[in-house]
Amino acid sequence: MLAFGRGLSQKEAARRTRGRAGTAALADMKKSLGARTVAYPTPVFVVGTYDVEGQPNLMTVSWAGICCSVPPCVSISLRRATYTYGNLIHHKAFTLNIPSQAQARAADYLGMASGRDVNKFKEARLTPVQSTLVRAPYVEEFPVVLECRLAHTFELGLHTQFIGEIMDVKADEEMIGPNGRTLIEKVAPFLFDPESQRYFNIGAPLGEAFSMGLLLANEPD
Image (cartoon, rainbow, N blue to C red):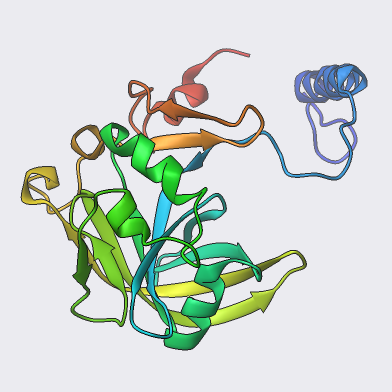
């Protein structure tokens, strides 16, 4: 059959028309919430730094995650008012620690108290360990840690974004699979939902990445 419009068959043109109509109908059902951060759970990370006098400190951060694969990098966003902000600027290094679900209470505390007032390692009954590659402490009890050197700093507004190049990843031996990767079911990380201000466990696997999506190609129109 001859093409309609810009090289589309009659069947394809009809399908796209239905798709546009469906999209418009769905858009009309959405309610505007304004310019704000979205209701999206984030991994719970704990930042480790030394203060200007060399005392170890910890802080749980809400905005953090992988931002580059080569070189491997993570980003964390901090308010200038935090104690960790000054520590990171001073030493240009930090660790990103991943607590397990069993350590949720400690992680929550580390996001509430300030290192200006208390020794958070001591209060949370955690053990500081000097990183081998950067000037920053990590948490012995947490299953996975990323040692990072400060690579870039961006002033965004209320928050400053720090980009850390990952110099090494350290993990408890029982958390490592035969392929040398960490096993998420062993690490048992958890999520923070900024909308409800609650923590959530990681659920069961949904399917194999770069595989389950191929099933769409075989589905009938």
